Amino acid sequence: PGWYGIGTAFRRAVLDDEARTQACRRAYEHGGAFRAFIDNAQQELARARLEVARWYAENEGGPIHDRLAREYEQSRRAVLEITGQAELLDNNPVIQQSIRERNPHTDVLNALQVELLRRWRSASAHQREELAPLVMLSVNGLAAAMQSTG
Picture (cartoon, rainbow, N blue to C red):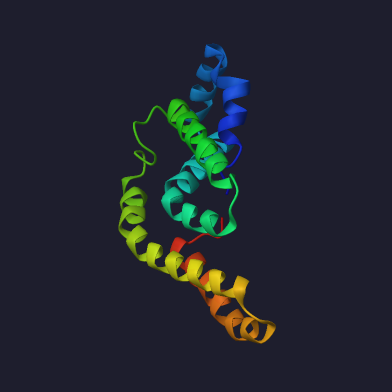
């Protein structure tokens, strides 16, 4: 995801130092590239659906979801610390509400895709040929619904 690593990086390089944290806050307030970077990260964080990501991780096994969840939380805290907001996208309520309204619909598409991938993994070569267009449609449908591929 587009936010992965931001929390760890800011915690290690910035947030443990009040002067650096203040410098980041000032840079964010003044706009420019740093603000664009932080706002892009917060938009991707707001789009993230960890409960849905768990569905995919359950099919894969392993501790990947726990790592994603920890990094998500660190990244969310870093963005909120720098922006001074209480919640992600408080500075953009239109997008914030749009994401809230969109999520139930994308959840259905994700559930469908998880099932298609489960079937793909257990399918024969011939069955995979039949499933391939459906898997690709689910990828395209989710990217269009989320207005993002990351």
